[in-house]
Image (cartoon, rainbow, N blue to C red; front, side, top):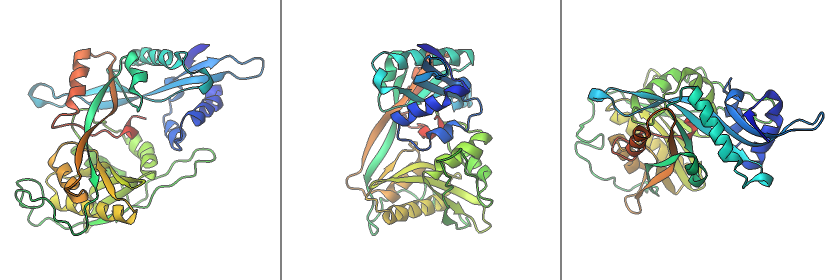
Length: 359
């Protein structure tokens, strides 16, 4: 058994391993957006005999990301470099032998050499990763039945907009557009969807960065927006709020899974109540159209989230829980700093976490 970085010759065996371990059609296309993916893929390989290639029996992949850290002196913004861990798998016939644990240790060694401050992953099996140093963090999730069409919404100070706001006089009305999905064929050699000419990703990126600045928020690069994000959005539904001149004032990303409408991402301009309300109404209508009876909002604890939740969810039967699928591990930073970062995720200024940013 050999633990090493992957080579081009390993790719067929690697993909066979993932096909057996995951039901994730976007896994390989997203993986292939990283030009240095093989250098950051740790495999456990059984040597082949003669012309028979090595068999990959376990894998751990990691990708560098820039993450918003805890506020610095005077509230100054800080960032960390983290290794986002994904595609962790082991062959069914060789499980229970510690292959994943050993591959994780090798990945951490590579992250240390690359200067990563910490490592981040999302999982439904935290017990696999805790012995290797990762610890869970919690983010708030609001769930409940979809609001009936004629139900009154909870009263708020000011108006139905942001608390304390009376709306913005003269603010241009917006129209919400359901953007066509950027579909791509995944059966053959990988191709990637492209943004349409009238959907400028730069506008989405600017809104995202201005709206999401809390700890553990990813700072997406231009390359992410041009290749990775279209892939993730192709599996979801994108609503954009357009001003009369066509400029994008805000956007919302949702997915319908069974009877649940899940809010994956939101970004609007500061104090832009009319755009937020328009997106919320459109999402509610889309949920009804898709046959959803429930909604889930997994966003920071900020006024905009409360407004969106009130627009989507009935008052009765609503509950706030925690999602603890995220895990953090110190690499080069002190453990106390990463512990404080984990604690910040459940606080009043908790950041937004869509696992797609780290895979």
